[in-house]
Length: 178
Image: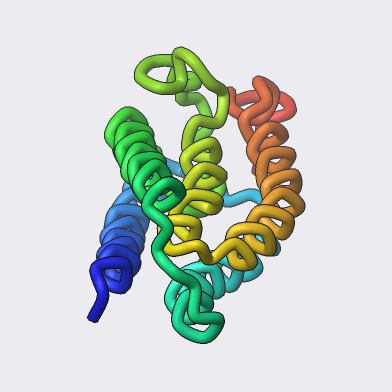
C-alpha cells in the first residue's frame, strides 16, 4: 500500500467521522424543529464525493500516474489545509453543522471562526481538496472532472443554503418555513 493510498483511505475514514457528527447534529437540529431544505441534491452530492475518492485511488494506479514532488508536496499541504479548514467549520458551527441543509428556525447566523471571513468556508475546503488531493499523485483527470461537476453541484447547494438561511426563513413568524 502506497503512502498516497493510505492518505486517501484516511480521508475516507474522516468522511465517515463527518457522517457520525452529521447524524448526531441532525438529531439535535430536528429535536429543535430543524427543517431540511433541498434534500433532492443530496444523493448527487454523496455520489460525486464517493466517485471522487474512488477516482483518487484508481486513476494513479490505472493510468500509472507518478508522484511528482514539485506538484505532490504542495498539493499535500493544500489537502491538509483543506482538512483543517473543514474541521474549523465543523467545530465553529457545533451542533448546527450538517452534511444536509438543515436549519433550526430562529437561530442567528454564525459569524465567528472562518465564517467571520467567508460566507461558505466549508465549500472553500471542498474546492481546495477537490483539486489538491488527486494532484498529490498527479491524478489530474480526477481533479478536473470533480472540480467541474462540483462547481455545478455547489451552485445548487449554495443557492439552496442561501434561500434556507434568508431572514424570512430563519426567524419564526410570518414567512417562516413550515
